[in-house]
Amino acid sequence: MLELSMTLPIKVQNGGLFISRGVGRHPARRLESWEIIFVEKGRLTIQEEERIFLVDAGESLLLWPNRQHVGVEDFPAD
Image (cartoon, rainbow, N blue to C red):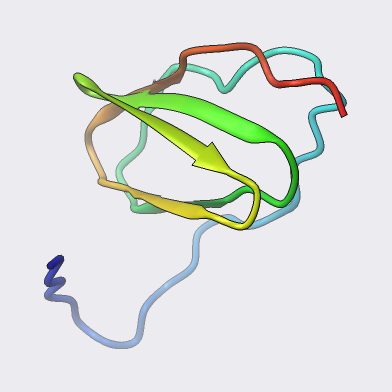
C-alpha cells in the first residue's frame, strides 16, 4: 500500500494530453514533482531508477519526484 503525506491544497504544475502517433519515446528526466501518467491506447514502457514498468491502455502509473525516469522502448504505432 502506498501512503502519501501532503499538505493541502495540492498544486498542479503541468497537465496535458500527449499523442505519440508511434514516433519517439518518453524522454529521460528527473522532475521535482509527482508525475501521473495515464495510457489511453497502446503501451508505455518506462523505467524509473532501476525498475521497468509496462503500462497498458486503461492503466496509470505514479512516478516519484526526484527519481530519474526514461522511456525504454519507442512508442507503438497507432
